[in-house]
Image (cartoon, rainbow, N blue to C red; front, side, top):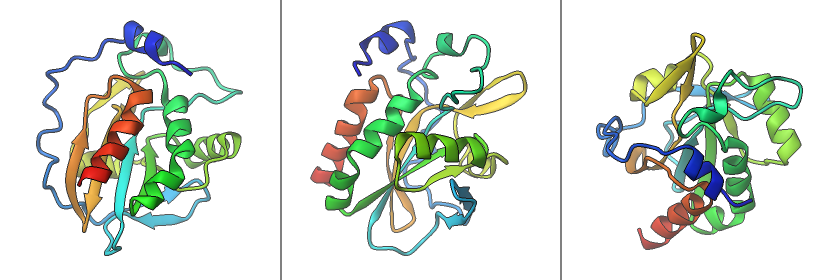
Length: 184
């Protein structure tokens, strides 16, 4: 899918400095529920890098999107983003990295999405905003529901070594992350 229309419909401000504090930060000791309801610890001593992509919300076939969702800059395209990470899973593994998705959606909605899209890696629920609050991630809200703005971090030995934000093109984003992993 070409995301050119998404970009034109949703200009994202380039001067958003809400993530400057993340580079070099140690990942907090938190564990979040994955799509199967199992806790996954994020702060770990693995030898591979974590590529954690945060997204706001994937649509559910039986639920309506929040009002005016498609007019919110950066909100539209989360299903495409999950699909792009899924389609490039083997490339991430070859580069000694593991993709993990995180949103504020509940476990049931994440499970539905991972089954529908055939995602085999962990997608986590930060429904209680534990990760959002501890990392001070950029968010937006609709009707008192809080959503994470789209961003990706690369974590090596529990330290955030790279932050991708803002993300203008979902199609190009995964390639940008893979290129950075190759070069670093």
